[in-house]
Image 1 (cartoon, rainbow, N blue to C red):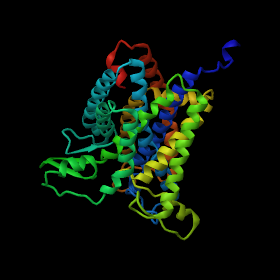
Image 2: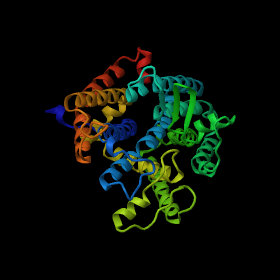
Image 3: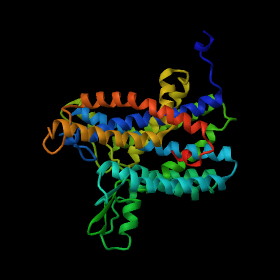
Image 4: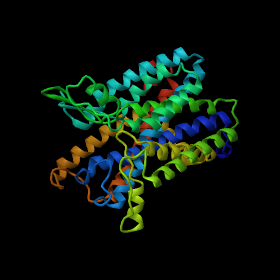
Length: 390
């Protein structure tokens, strides 16, 4: 049948599809991490992880999830550039970023936090990745007026230089305590006797990531040949990974927790890869963004594959998927708790990471269909303004 013959994608379609597919890949990986946090909470680990006490399957599953936030924030900046190229106006781009940033902040506080805590009114509000993406978009709305070279410099300085501020802290009650907790120090903010805020994702380095993503948008403009773009992405990605390896070997700047040789090669590798996410260290961002850029090339080269098209479904409606999976996980947890009780002490959960992976795969398959349907609605009903925020 003629309909079964694959039609080669145009260069423009290929470059945009690769962005959606990479976004889809990282949110599916995010699903794995959130399944772990839902059904494996009795084996919860801190950050950075304790290599000596963490089983390798749990360690590497968590390490894989480190890709999610940096790649997603970088692609947010890149997508903002593409939006501006289509709109033809920095002012329109800045306005969209400001409105969507405020929308995401409200979404984190009202909708996302409730999915995690199921408390209303809440006693704790966790300011996590959606919050920091919203703040990063507000920051980019101001920064995008800079020349591209200045935006790149700003991004590099924030990503590479923020670890120099690790020793700077402000006690509660100090005028800088609240802004510094938002910008760089992960911590608690006491709003009242009954409400606390947790700044899980300090902002400063993420502004650098979204700025670099926006600057990379020029590589995706229609006039840039695919080979040129891919060489630039390879070069930047491999250079970032090489920078990670060199700096990590030196055990110097860019990662507070040093690595050391362990009893076996596996645990030595775990120690080497044990990098800090809160706030994201320079080495954390070098490794994750470097791998993300390389993945972007590999996905673009494989753009006709069925798995790429499947990932595009998730990447085309990421916020809808994000909200849907949180509430589905909460419903599944409550149902399991109601049927089987708290079979792991304080928490209901599964016995091993194999079950976590199995649940994640089944959920990804199950959620594919509603996400695809919403994505088609979003594409068809461009007259409904609020849909573009999801």
